[in-house]
Image 1 (cartoon, rainbow, N blue to C red):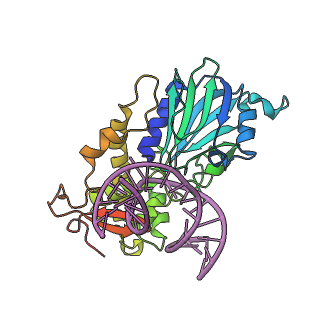
Image 2 (cartoon, rainbow, N blue to C red):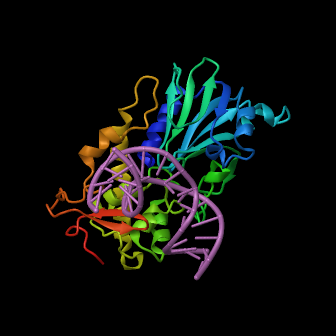
Image 3 (cartoon, rainbow, N blue to C red):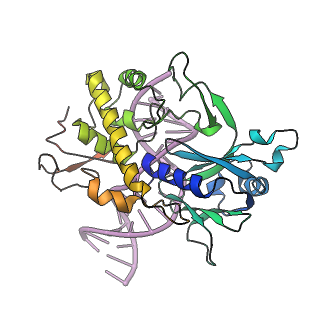
Length: 308
DNA sequence: AGATCGACCTGCCCGC
DNA sequence: TGCGGGCAGGTCGATC
């Protein structure tokens, strides 16, 4: 499920239910899930206990917990300088907060944090493209490489592994005209640019297809053939559709449960083209088609979105 | 430097 | 019923 709106729903759930709690123990059962954490699973298990979660932060599809009081840093380091516990949900990752963990661990449990109050945070990941990693927080010049954003732009403090990810389309400090100029320089097609997380982050295959349909632009359209105003329209539509999805995803986490299953609320009702092959275009009634695209798919209305 | 391709996984659904 | 192929919300590293 996880594109920006889903990850933001998870982040909000972590903020509500995990921030302020102290980790008592960490169990990382999957070495693969820890593959991007220096020192691997054993180091995570050793270092996380006693850390207090101070914030839940997101950029694009990455979310991290900032930690204070991480003991292995040693007494010389001020507590505030402790690192971040970074998560990427990959294709199938879930973060689930439970007050009562129950007996049987969930299928595909990759890691579990137990808090001092006995509640747990489970990282569950069926396809194992996701991961968790302890990472250092570093100041960056601005969002992403080439992030020229110009004089006076405030930098961000990011985990090292997120430093190359650009500001996302719902970031209030995103400089959209500068982004349009950077996109315009790319010698590729519009959908590839939309999915390039070093230009702007957060957009995945679903929202790319939905944004292009809303903007009436074919996914294979070369950037070179697009007017800046059209690029701008696509980006605005991407931000809009993600904002609308977020509103619907936000309703679904209640109780002590960080919902990673926002699919139920949003999908069936609001998607115009993604997964709608063979259905009617909600705008013109033409048949929605699916095209092969980079080992995956694009969904579009051939009438609203004319082939280049 | 920028763009593209394959690799990394499990599970489900479809057709034979 | 079983099995093979295709497909699924993503990213990274190696290549061109």
